[in-house]
Length: 162
Image (cartoon, rainbow, N blue to C red):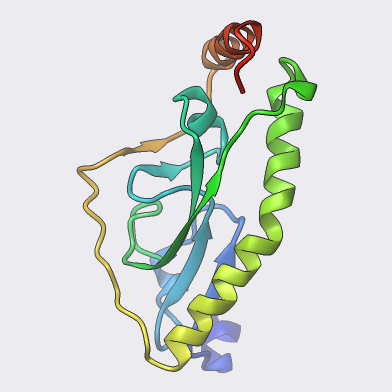
C-alpha cells in the first residue's frame, strides 16, 4: 500500500485478478477501473462465458467499470458486445471452447480498456451507475451445473444448433 501511495497514480487498471480491497483500489486519485468479461449488471462475477452459454445467450458483454466495494458493481465507463456462437468442433468440451473464445476476446478487451483510459484522461466520458437489481452475481459453477451445460449442448448439437 505504501508503494502504491508513493506512486501517486491517477488511475489503476485491473484485469483478471481476485477481489481487491477498497483500501487498495481507492488509492489512485481517479480510482481504479476493471475490465469485466461480462455484460454488467446482468452478468457480474464469473466465470465469463460459462453462464452466458448456460443461459443460451447469443452474445457476451465486455464492461469497463470503476471498481466498487461489491464485485462488478461500479459505475460503467464503456461496454461492448461480442457474438457468442458455440463451435460444434468442440463437441461437449465446453471448457476448451471457453478457453478458445476468451483468448479471442483479448484484443477486443485491450482496445476497450485503452479507449476507456483515453476517455477518462480526456475527461470525455460519463459514469453510468449500474442497477444491480437487474441480473445477478454469478459464482463458479458446481459439477451439477457443468453437467447440465453438457446436457444442453448435447441437445443443441443434436438439433444442428450452435
